[in-house]
Image 1 (tube, rainbow, N blue to C red):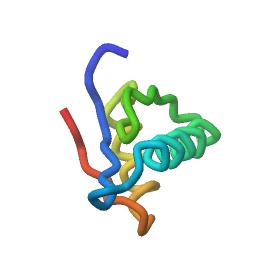
Image 2 (tube, rainbow, N blue to C red):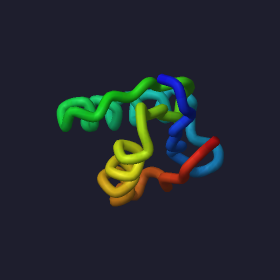
Image 3 (cartoon, helix red, strand yellow):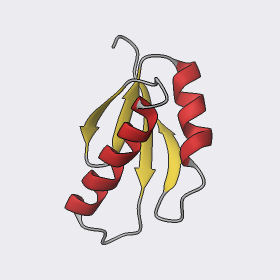
Image 4 (tube, rainbow, N blue to C red):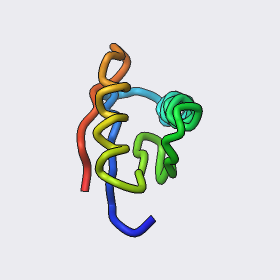
Length: 73
C-alpha cells in the first residue's frame, strides 16, 4: 500500500485496547467480504489501498454507536 489512506475508529476514553482491537479487526473483515482490502496498523486504525475504498468504508462503518469514524493521516 503506497499512500496513507487511513480511517481511525475513535472510541470513548477509557475503552480497553483489546476491545478496540477486536472491533477494528471485525470491521476489517466486514470490509474484506465486500472486496475492500485493509491493513490494521494498530488497535483502532485501518489503512486502505485508495481513497475510493476509504470513502466507501467511512460510509459503511459510520452507523455504529461504539465509535466515531474519522479520516487520519
